[in-house]
Image (cartoon, rainbow, N blue to C red; front, side, top):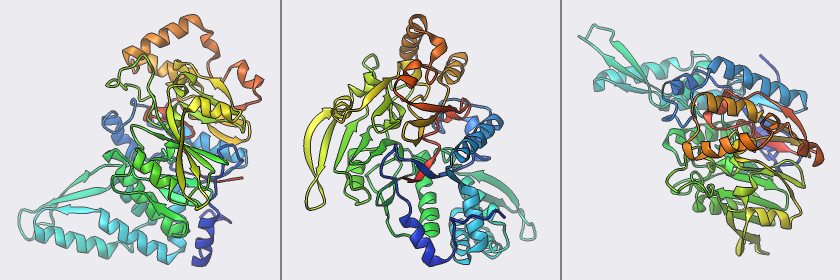
Length: 442
């Protein structure tokens, strides 16, 4: 079993460990992330990609290699990487309290169908057997959420089992979205899409039982909040609202005490001027980080076209500790007022997840090769017609061989980059930023 000096088991240290979750700014040096290695759950999504909220089908074996390579890149750059499955298994195997909580969680997750008598018998048998099962089996059970339908011919028949997986957590490898870490702890979000609603239930269980409940808060009810819509930047923070996060969720986060920014800009994630409201198509504005991100304390990489259309309201911290509503502005103007320069992404680069990079230190990022992603989109006709017309024009009018990040402007603005091939994994709708839950920077 792999040992980790950071993951102590004693309960009093677990509570202390939660206080070490600290992210003040996206450009601070990245120290620690949690990632979820895609498993059998994504095989289900390949059978119905759109219904699982994926952009396109992809080759899962290649995707797994890409995920392992991303982990290696981060480790080589001094980032501590914990794989969610390993984190759960190691803790359960060494902490009896956590193991019992995990067994109880699995017992509540598995469902049995058939006659009431048969279902009751099977449930009792599972509860009896849980203490025997490997921790890896328990973890996989939570990911796959199985239901078992038992059909018996007679009383002596052991029964014929039909196994269903209610909703495998195929999107769980996008670990950014279930929660957000700021400079006062962690907040568990509330996913808008029913396909992803159980992900926060799982991560809340793991974070609260592993790291303790101190400095951990949740968003629930009609308030919706996803981590991809939050970008911290030291004395100010940005929250996007739109298809996933709503205003109620943004306000709940702002007033939770998890962050202490002097200002927070809540802005509406926009669509392009050539798109209709009913045709979101490529989900260009799903999250804030799908069109905007911060690479250093003075440089943003984003679609300027969208940033100028992203209207928002500034909320300023009061002496009493809350926030009061201030002026309205656009994301572009707001960042310019704070002396940020923009590296502009064209439409082709933006829909290829160029802004979904992960900043690992001030001016250094891990990003995708947008040309590789665009090739997959074009080859398999995964681009909506409205967007495709723009892409064709850009290909005809620009040096298409120098798509992000292979552009001179990166050097001009002092941005160093490491390119990771995530061309398969991006088929689930996200890049390196979405695939990592940053829990410690600075």
